[in-house]
Amino acid sequence: MKSSLIRYGGPAAGLGGALCIATFGMVYRIYGLFREQAKTTFFGGDGFVYVFYAPMYVLLLLGTAGVYLRQRSYFELVGKAGFYLTALEFSLGAIGSATIMAIAGDEATVSVLNLVAHALSHVFYALGSVLLSIATYRAGVLPKGAVVMRM
Image 1 (cartoon, one colour):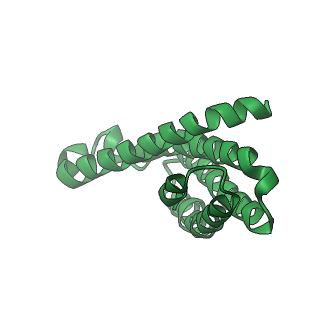
Image 2 (image 1 turned 45 degrees about the vertical axis):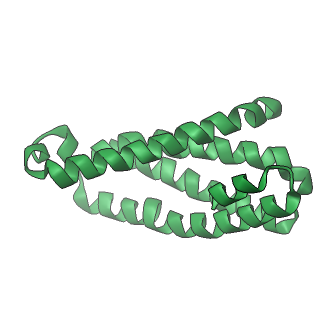
């Protein structure tokens, strides 16, 4: 299992990143250009975006786990803390997105979940990503360009 996660972590992270870029591109297109036309359709509701967010977070979590497992023996406290903060963010994002999709009708609940699942989790991601990048740079296992892309 561990070797499979290391092996497929890179493609999972790449696919998750591509899904992230595609999702933000679609959101900009639909909400920015076609706001009036999309209002009464599925694409105009809150649930549309979270259909893409949930798998994106899962793929990014798998990618981060693969990178961590590949370099785990070189990491110290900084690397472990960075991984756990980043994993917490991706987990919160995935669980929050799935929950929001399930209860998309209740606006008050959706706004609270959105705050917890996305706004708070981005704080964890910012801290965890910087710490994990520092540890990856120190470990020297991956190329230095990978560290720059990680940040």
